[in-house]
Each structure stands twice: as structure tokens, then as C-alpha cells.
Figure (tube, helix red, strand yellow):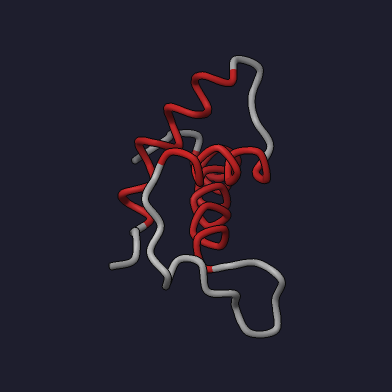
Amino acid sequence: MSITEKELILPSLQVISDSGDGISTSDLIAELRKKVQLSPEDMEILQWRKDDKFSQKVRKIFAIYWHCQYNCGVYFL
């Protein structure tokens, strides 16, 4: 079964916290690949793209985070 964005939140926060000075999206994706169990579905390359479903999920989390930071002024998980 494919990992959900919700299941990625806590591992993402842990990696970001452990990084100290912040972390790029690509480095976060690489670190999360070491920490979570990916299904074959997560590793499928997306049509018309060079990345897989897993990296898109992580990028979606970042997009939501930045949207809240600049538009809401309050962070929610």
C-alpha cells in the first residue's frame, strides 16, 4: 500500500529538525527514502515527469507548508 502524505508528516518533521539549519526539498526526499518503507506504487515514475509518486507527495507537503507560512501566518498539521 502506498504511503500517504499524512504518514510522511512526522518523519518529515524529524528530518527537518535533525538537519539543524534547514534542508532542501531534494535532500529531504533523499533522507525520507532512507527512513520510510516505500511501496512499488510510491516508486512509479509519473507520466510526463522525471520524478516518482513519493517525491511528489513530499513536494506537496512542502507546498502546503510554504502556503501557510506566507498566507495564513499560522502553521497547522
